[in-house]
Length: 594
Image (cartoon, rainbow, N blue to C red; front, side):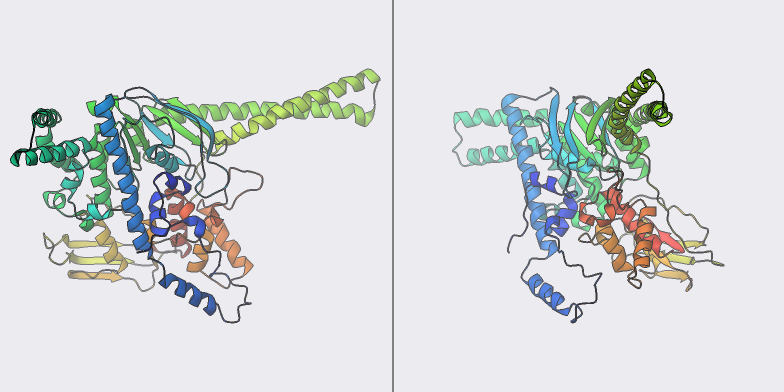
C-alpha cells in the first residue's frame, strides 16, 4: 500500500491535534476548492470537479488506512524512546535533577505566528503542574512537544509517557485486553522477561556459558526486585480502581468504547510509573468515582512524589486537588509563566492583578488626558513664552507617558484574555406535553451478558426538562440517548417521540460530527446552506460568534479568526463550540450533549 503523508512524532507539532492529523492527514494539503459556496459561473454544476476528485480518490489510500499506518509509526517511535530510556537508566542510573526548558519557541500548528516566543520553564521532580490557558492557545501542542522531547533538555534516561485526549489503537493494541495492555506498559519488566527467555533457551540447549549463568541470576534478581510476579495482580487492582468489571478487563480493546480505551491507556501510564507523566484531559471519560481515585492517586501516592506530572484539564476541582504549580500560556503575550500553588491560588492572584493593572492603566490614561488638555490650552488661546514652553514640556511628558501606556496595553490584554467567551445555545420554543416518553422500556445488545442493559425504564421529557444521565462507562448512557433520538428500537416497551419536536445530538467524538477539512463557517454552510445570500452568511457568522467561535478583530490581535480556520487546526475545546453551534442553530427542542 502506498504511504501518504507519513509523519514522525516530532513532526506532530506542525498539527494542532495528533488524533485529527492521524484521521484526516496533512491539514496543509487541504483542498482550496470551495464546494459549498459557488458563484454560479460553473456551467457544469461542478460535475467536472467532482469527477476529477472522485478519480483521484480511487488512487489514494483511504483516511482510515493512512490513520492506521501513522498510528503504528508514532506508537513505535514512542515505544523506542521508552525502551531507550530504560536501557539508559540501567547504564547511567536514574535522573532526579530539574529539567530546564530554556528560550524555546512553540510553533503554531495552524500556521502563522508562533504560539509561544522566548518561553522558558523549569520542571522539578515531585511537582505536579497544571498547564492552563484559553482553548487554542497551545496546551495540547506543548504536551506533545514534551512527549517528542522538542521542549526542554530531557535526558535520555528520563522516561516519558503521554496520554492524549482521544485514543487511536495500533494494530497490536486492538487485540490486547486491558490487563495485557497495562502489564506491557512496564518496559523494564518486558525487556528483562525477554532476556530471561533467551537465557533459559540457551540453558535448555546446553549453550549457556558461565557468563550467561551470572547474567541469568542477575536478571532473576532484578525481576524479583521490581515485583514481576505481581504485575498481573497489580494491573487488575489498577483497572478495578478505574471501574473495570472482570468482563471488561478481558475484552479486546477493539470491542471497548472510547471511554474505556482512554481509561486503559491512563491505567497503562500510571502502571508504567514514568519519570514524566503527561495527561491531556484525563478526566473527560472518567466517572465521578474514577476522577476521585485518580486525584487521590496523583496527589497522595508515594510513586508521584519523586516524579514530574503535567496535566491539562478543564476540571478545576481536579486541578485544585492534584496540582502544586501552574504553567500558564498567554496567547496575547505569547508568553509562558510559571507560578506556585494550585489553580484557585493562581486564579485569585490573577484576579487581583487584573483589578490592579486596570486601575493603573486608567490612572495613566487620565494623566495623559490631563497633560494633553493642559498642553493644548496655551496653543489654542495664546499665552506668554514661558507658559508656552511649560505647556510644551507637558506635551512631551504626555508623549512619554503614552509610550508607557501602549507598552502596558499588551500586558493588560494578556491579563484579560482568560475571560470566558460567550456560549449561547439556541433552543426551540415550548411544546405542550411530552417531547419524548419512555414506557416500560428495556434494551440489550444481541449475545450480550447480561441480556439487558436496563429494563422497566419509564420517564418523560418536556420542553423544560434538564436531565443529567449518570453512570459508569458501559452502563448504557449513550444507548439510552440513542433510544431517545430514535436511532435504536427498544427490545421491550415503547418510545414515543413528538412529531412536532426537533431533536439534536452533540457527538462525544467530534471527528464523527465535524468535517475536519472545512472551516467552522464552511461546515455550518454545508449543514444550513439557506439561500446563499449575504444576510444568511452574516447570520451564520453571528451565530458562531455567539457560541465563542470568533471571526477575528482588526483592533485586537488576541481575538483570532476561528471561523475561517480549518477544524483540524482547532483545539478540542474550540471544536466543541463548533459542534454546539451546529446543533443549536436548528433550535432543537431536545438537545443531547454527551
